[in-house]
Image (cartoon, rainbow, N blue to C red; front, top):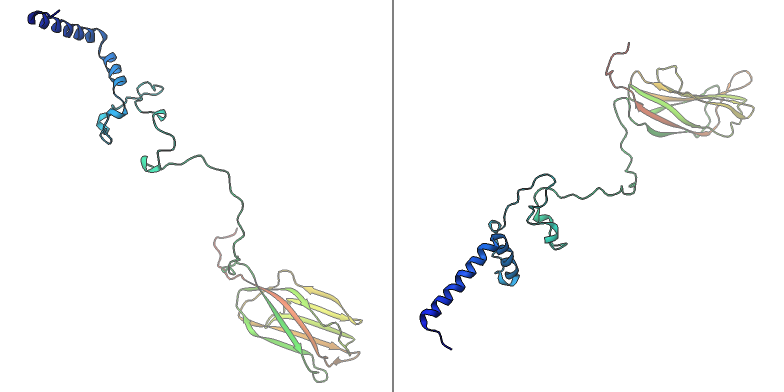
Length: 244
């Protein structure tokens, strides 16, 4: 059955008024919810949503109700460091294994440095004349303010023709000994390495002497090989503070 035009218009208008009234009764919040159910990802043009389209949250301590974007809204593993400002650091991990020791540094200077270790080899290749001891002066001078210590003294196992003998190592111009030893009954009875050594007052060479004593006088020194292992430490640093 066809309705007259006037009645049809009244009917459409009535439906429209009813729809508007319904929206007014439901309220804007329900309208937004209804729109959210009707608009999906397929209805949004890619790359069209901007920062201004997302409502800023007003977050107070202990209040998470206004957070509009949360971790649950972001796919795991999709954010990188470029998506954040500042420095991103996780929890500190456990300590790693201890690395290898570094190389030994050079000898120090200024009084507290490490020692330089050197071997001084002595050789008496031929017999000296009667009544003369053996005396060797080092070709290198020890700088002033250097502590000289004997670490090891190696002497010949045999001294034929020497009932007794004496060895001394000292800086030239000093009566203080760095090392000493005495030969008795075909063996070295004592080997003295003077603890602390000698600190040189001025630049000077070292002197090694070996004397061979007979029954009544000095005998010639037979051929021999010997060596002294020496430690040199700079002790020339000036005082840094007074001592009372």
